[in-house]
Length: 380
Length: 252
Image (cartoon, rainbow over the protein chains, first blue to last red):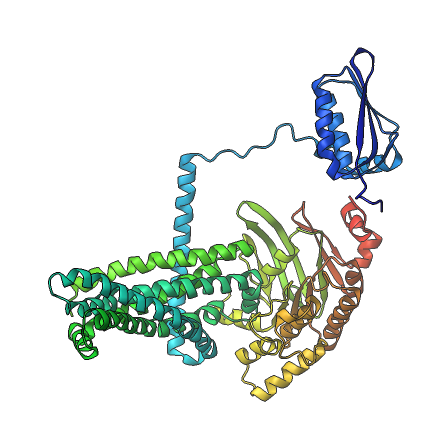
């Protein structure tokens, strides 16, 4: 192999009679030289020579880029109707030039241009895709719910070992961050509201404000958002990767039902852990509020707990738990659905994880609003 | 079409489309009990697609596949379960569950579909792994193994329930000659020892000549079968130039 380090083609241009140009290439022409050579040749073409002869007798060696440079030069001359010829082409260079498909050097004369999508076509396609997606999600949801019901009726068909693994992943592993966020939420709500309530001497209502806001509304939502981000995306990525690696197909061919095998344990684990996480989040938020109460509002621990328990009813707590149970099934379900819908490669897995979180958040908000309406009408 | 005696798999006028793109068009052939059939053809001609449809992993646009006389597209869950019980499949990358050890992977069908005691299952797992030359790898995860080992482990899992039919997708691709020869002789031993029907997707000429009693050749332009029969006979008198190019490793 020749040493490419010492390479460097040089070009010398001499003008003959009647605008005739003779171009002589010397040395080695490699990828790194092509840019400067192209510039020099461009300058030569700008002068519109009447005839161009390229002498390659002193050219020692060229790589494919060098050969492409020679061919584009020939092409450019032909385009400008300048008579053109190579003289004294060395064997090595000819060999390289023969390797090159000349049709590939020139851009296609009429590149097939992708027809720009019209407005109505785009809207139609997006709508069709939306309904297709919706149909798939509903079908999957139905299958999943029936499989979960089957699992609860025949507990032996459920892979309980997996359930425990996912309970740890969804629940235990999520506790530190959820505890921290909830504690800070409680702290902030208490602090902000105390600033306002102080003006009316209504400090004692800080406790009930924190308790009711967190237990009824924010606790379940915060928990669900966190679980969607941590576990919904993880479910989608895990199942998506298994689809890409043909692991899901291999389960099917072995006679297992992939939904029962992969999705049901995740749903059960989420349904068991998210309500518990919600209670945990409520507790830490109340502790956060209590910090503000004791430090900033001169309430005692006893007073604060009294005020909190006076404000809260069992109904409030149950409200939150029921909501969080629904959130859990939705988040885990959409995560699994997005995972199973993966087609293609690594990028599709990433998209599925993103989509699992976005759809999860959307469903959380939608369901929470629905619950607000239901609880408003159904007095219990 | 009448079912011929001894035919365990019948593919009848199978057509496969992805959207508007036709992948396979009117493919028909059969596989007899105990036979080794290789589905061959150049890259991208739909070999793997055909195999996937033969085991019911895809929905054909038209036509049907019968396994043991059961149409797998319209079979009930119960029928499908017994069909699946009788087939083993090796996927291109092995298809092992990445989160489970080799032992757990092979135990999966055993614990899922049999009432064997845990000790018995453990013994079967050990024996199956030894059969493919992976003794002592029970506690390894698939990710810790080389590609060839993963394929052998995949065969061990496909063989876990001693199926009547084994489907192998590219079992020799990307392997060194020694490993590849090892898998070839494994396939042959399983076939001779247990009379297992084998359907193999491969384009390795050596494997085709050494293993195949019959070869089904697909072609990308015809989107279907261009030749079928004994590979040696096909090489002697190729029915068309493409088959000749294929067997003689010539460019077109």
